[in-house]
Length: 291
Image 1 (tube, rainbow, N blue to C red):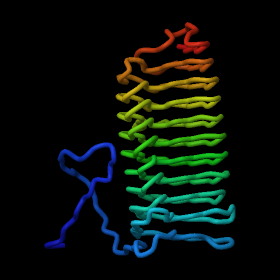
Image 2: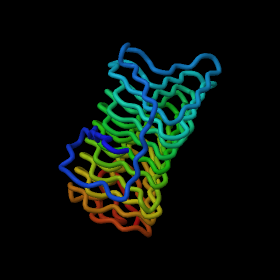
Image 3: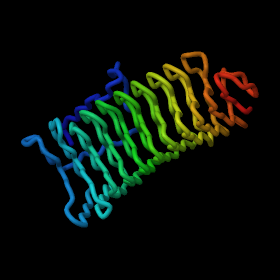
Image 4: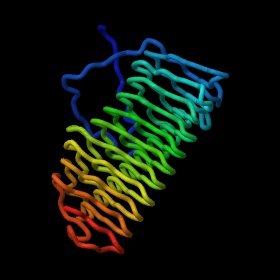
């Protein structure tokens, strides 16, 4: 409308905008804003068999300990249907054994992690955006599962995605970029799958994908790991990396794929730069890259 103003605030903790244009984009104004800043408390907690469906609303807080959404029972269920935004919570979303489904949930500027999923929690969310987390983007523990197709995990302090203890993260066409630590840190028999022509794990401050302690990655269908501050992919301590039809190049240590301590990398049909050890040669305490 005439004389209206839109203010765009950068919540990326990696850097500031130097300027630029928004071309061919669309904007949607959310008419409903719920402000929880008056109390340092959780936003939505769930009673017995709690089920919440929510859409087209912004949920904001200045809380230092509150969680915007808190699900702590297997019977708790959240549906964020379209255009739900959170800003400024301690955690935006905490799922302990509960279930979250939806499309279009955007979480920005959490004091710690944007998303924390544990105790076999389950999240299936298209077009998920997590940016500006003070401790990281997504933390997934203890046999939990997150599916986040077309996601954007960007500009978080710490890791973009951190997986441990038998957990799984799956993303088609997702990006994990410009996080201050690793794009994805995977340990303790956990699994990450990233594929799709626009999938990127790039420009993170440290390693693109770090695998440790019996974990695995599937990187395929034109996904790219590039321009990270450390290695592209580290595969260590009995972990396995399956790289097919993907690209791993231009990472800043000058080693794009690093296998060590009985880590095994299968790199057939893709594009990659430098490796350690050399392909088809054992090294770094039993590391092996099969190409």
